[in-house]
Length: 317
Image 1 (cartoon, rainbow, N blue to C red):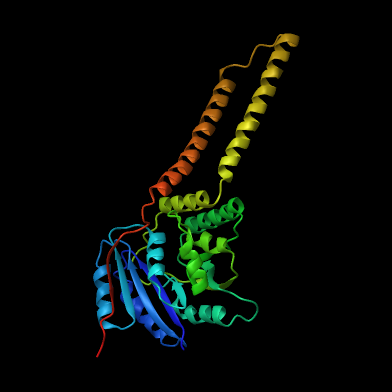
Image 2 (cartoon, rainbow, N blue to C red):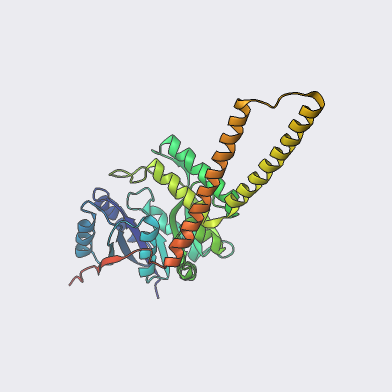
């Protein structure tokens, strides 16, 4: 019996890229030694993306779609598609061809027939980022390094969401019930062996990226806060060090005044100390607030997404 691979494609404002993407994807999946189903997930697009997805499903077999009620974010869109997957394996890839479909066969072979050991997951990891902005690339590297250090979960530099997982790993991932999700970290947290496949990152085939610099910053911060409480520990350590230094300085000022009669230092030093301590307090109060807000959102137990419509390909005679 042939294996079935479910290919999940989250989409947000990809009307220009979708026809080009599906043409190349169809060529590549025809070469796979297994059956496939393609699940398009529209994440509240404002353009014609939902209509194009439905048109593709009407014209081709093996296609399904999920339309979300609004934009919930890429993580929620991926989760919606993975929950709909019926295959023995599931793959996640972007619709802009920055995740080349030709690597699907390589990833499938790495999981199905690993040369050594068991690899329930294969994931793509780019060597270079063609067409990417230098600032964005450097920031992405910085976030991944800090994430690995703070969380204890090692994610290679250049790791992407382009991955293929076995049904066992998919079921384990779906069993995690948290609503604040960072899939790269969660898949690695599960602990199964991963085969990393290096590739040259491609430029978008059409359209513009929906990611902004502020969006990347927020995504990176959410990733760190979701997997580590070390920022709070650093805040406590900084507070302890500051108190110790303040005590030493106070003792030194008293001794200096009594023995040598030197006057207490003036306004500039006092101003700098107050500014430093005030800024530190506000920074770590903000971090505490973010952790509390995460707890607050988790206790609400709201679903990570709301489905507006689902459908499948028209049966051809």
